[in-house]
Length: 328
Image 1: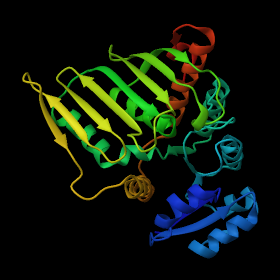
Image 2 (image 1 turned 120 degrees about the vertical axis):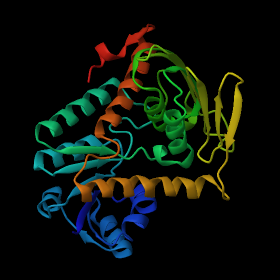
Image 3 (image 1 turned 90 degrees about the vertical axis):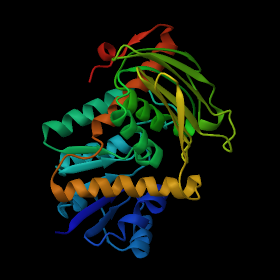
Image 4 (image 1 turned 180 degrees about the vertical axis):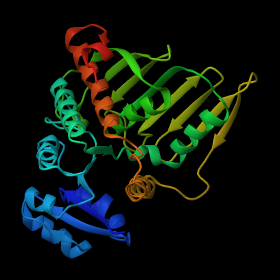
């Protein structure tokens, strides 16, 4: 079986994070569409594959899945066109929608994302997200330890996150602590980019009954940990620090701490690249097996739901019932 994988968007993310892996997978054939056709041809010359002048031509190629890797400002526009053309599957870069850029997700982005996924579901089109931070070694181990050590119900989350990792860490919070029901936030409602953004503090109530708070900032040096997240459960706590660890586990009545470091030389760059490879490998395997994707498109909408609730809470100075005001 040969998998036809199409890329809608052949910019730097596609060239740096996706194609170095996909071009080496023996049962994958690649197809490309980019608004600037010259860029698509340059990518095809480097990595192999076929270039299509239009989304209609790309769809007629009958790809097994289309990876939507355009800029986030036009991602929903391209994906909506692909949905209307009837492609069988879509795989999204993060965030799912961000018309004004991922530094400023709005309530309208959530609405667009919800409408897009609803339209895809009505047409039987499967959607998936990348969210490659779930595939870091310490994230995989944290998930396993929570289950193996029977840590119990999530009772609290707290963390500091650089905006460069903001959407990923919101996904990690939802992945490891479960659904959020209410959000109350303070801080800057407007900023132009990750690098001039003012701090935001978001406190929230978990569906489990627990609570949490996330601080978003771009003021910390990139040489410092990009995120520091602690998850508290009934019978223990998990702490994740940065892309390359460490992971700390506190369990038992004695409060003993176990520290897990990577067992090989590490740095952010190679580990970041490998997380993409693992995310893509897991996704391709589900295509071969005909099973649901590792991370559904719904996860992308849930991340936007949390950000939309933050924006409304700041703008209106009140707690937001996320499940009612931004229902999925």
